[in-house]
Image (cartoon, rainbow, N blue to C red; front, side, top):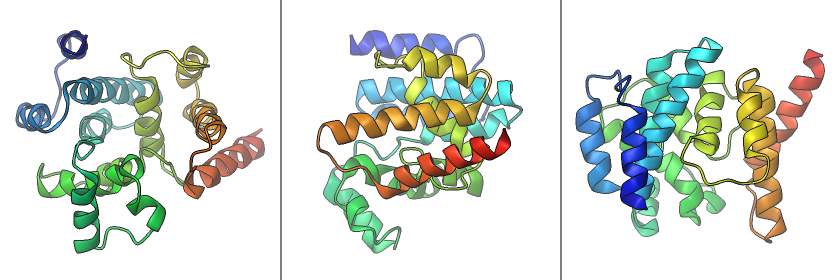
Length: 212
């Protein structure tokens, strides 16, 4: 199944290969540092981010770069993520530091810069916030955050197809529905929802209401 996912992800990119000339080296590093399923997911998010960028008039190269690298730190042990975060003053948020599911985004931005040579601030920002969002996030940030949850290899979950359809016309509405689903899933299981996600949901609701 895992090898099939990798093949499916690679096939997505066959008709239009990754644009960045560094991509072959990056793909090799990601294949070596991520579990196969996570590697396939990263390729698929790169494809989805680039596609949404084309649809919504964003920079497809930056969307692709952020999508490809967004999980570059995901498979690091939590104690290694914590060491990097503390040594380089990436965050002092105790909730982030306690959770690899949250911390990998912040550490991933640092790894993307130090190990992959990514220097574009907006790409690094999109990596930093791809799992929580933030109040006032850019449309590039939205594109990557949303692509993470709707890429073609994602297993089905409630409202996935509705979110995918919305993504064709409105990043904001699609992201709001996606984050609300995440919030419902997390809280229904008694797990911790980071306040940044709650604030992002409230901000998107207000922004969409004011735009009517």
